[in-house]
Amino acid sequence: FRNRAEQADFIRRSQYMSRPHKKQKRLPTDATEGLPVLNLHAAGIDVGSREHYVAVPPGRDPRPVQPFGSFTADLHRLAKWLVACRIETVVMQATGVCWVALFQGLQDYGLDVQVVNAQPTKMLPGRKTDVQECQWLQKLHTFGLLNHSFRPAEATRVLRSYLRQRENLVTAASICVQHMQKALTEMNVQLANVISDLTGVTGMAILRALVAGERNLHKLAQLKHKQIRATPAEIVQSLEGNWREELIFVLGQSLDGYDFHLAQIQECDRQIETHMQAMESKVDVSVHPMPPSRQGQKRRKHGPRFDVRQQLYRCTGVDLTRIDGLDVQTAQTVISEVGVDMSHWPTESHFASWLGLCPDNRTSGGKVLHRGTRRVVNRAATALRIGAWNLIRSQSALGAKFRRLRARLGAPKAITAMAHQLARLVYRMLKFGTAYVDKGMEHYESKYRLQQMKWLQKQAAAIHLQLIPAQGSPE
Image 1 (cartoon, rainbow, N blue to C red):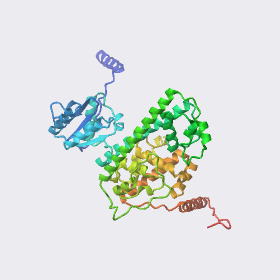
Image 2 (image 1 turned 30 degrees about the vertical axis):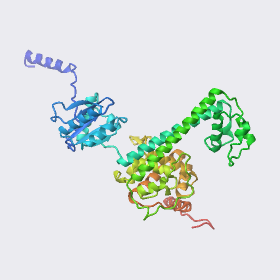
Image 3 (image 1 turned 180 degrees about the vertical axis):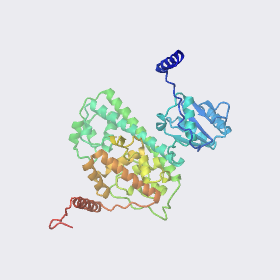
Image 4 (image 1 turned 135 degrees about the vertical axis):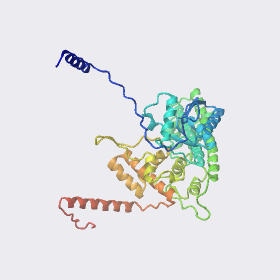
């Protein structure tokens, strides 16, 4: 150093550089900065049971975020405020059923309302309060980063509501049957061991006589139907028990509940029939009559009493029950959930993926962490899975394929694979109006053998070998 001043300055600077400095906080970056604006006049709503928080773009109102109540008058005030703010499209999350009334109210004012799934936006940052959540939804919708959920047409939604109510009534009737069976078991009345169906003609006749006060076992045994294989003596032995008064009361209450729900189911069927007759027709039945019914289809015990198959054929233009495994009620459930317009899905692969019937493997670093399908709660997918299981004894090409997959992959994976196949067939029939033709189990088996032969020949050629058919075997 030239002098002591330079030495002191060097020491001071060295000590300053060696001191630990506090790390400066990094300012959060905006992930949407630089993205093109797709929805300039967009609003976001955080739906709640008591209050809805609504966010509009800055500059449209001195208070761009405002809460509104859930009463009908508040919904009208909300819609008028959005119209005054020059809003054209609105996005909201599907929170229970609280969004339904708000959705319909905003549509009545001419707004383009879209419902999105809350799962894709759950892991995104910046959502700490209801105010920040509605602002975040508005921002994402402005840049077109949200995919709206599928919502069928109005006529389909009405049919879906009727069928879901009918399903609830059938479930309630089944619970009443379980209560009746429990009361009989507690009295040690083993009637279910000699007749196959407690709610059949014989079972209901005996139960009604028991509730009415009849205790003569031989008279009760004479109420059996001629198709019952059990003898009167066996029925008498099954009816011997301890006739406790409180259990007879429970039996009567459960029987009344079962009759009540059956009456409700019939009333619901009349509403479904009236609504389906009012739905738009895609084919004139008088000009193009309905094809004959496929053999082997049985009507369910609590099935509709009117001709559902003809109404479905008139509304869709195709007969979905021609597909092996799909009965009338399964086809009706699928139509009530997805509708008849397949333009919402570009391809049949998109349709199957929306139903949750496609593989969704979780991978990380080239390693598969989980194999399976997406967790989707969809009544249409459930109905198709039931239809796939019905193929277990079907003497058709689909039945042969299901049995082969079941033997190789197991029942759960085979059911999902066949439900995927049924979804593709339903998509093709509804979109293109083509009829399904079963080529038969023999055609499928021969095609599968040909594929196996080609695969074996390819494997043999890879190791420089040649397959020679055995004598007496087909080429």
